[in-house]
Length: 86
Image (cartoon, rainbow, N blue to C red; front, side, top):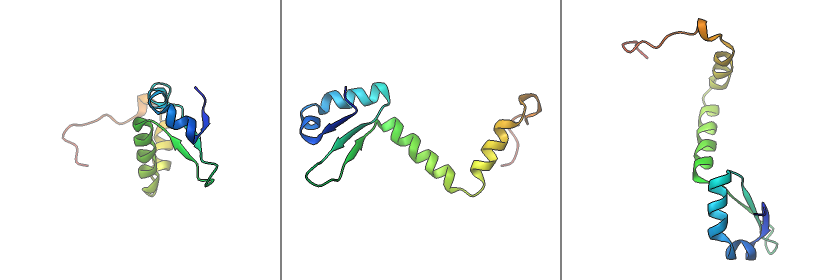
């Protein structure tokens, strides 16, 4: 499937586009030459992942905390304690 197409073709192929973006997780750009306002079709799972990333990036210090934690050796990582206060 093409990853970029005009709006007329997208209208005709919408069912196939929907299935393709859900299976491949690759976006499809739809060009609207009449207005110049293009759209991008993505899966709901991908959209939810983008929203989650934006949310976490909006929390001051969160990105730095995640990066720091990813560098921590697993054998030095804190163990989850069920009764631990958050």
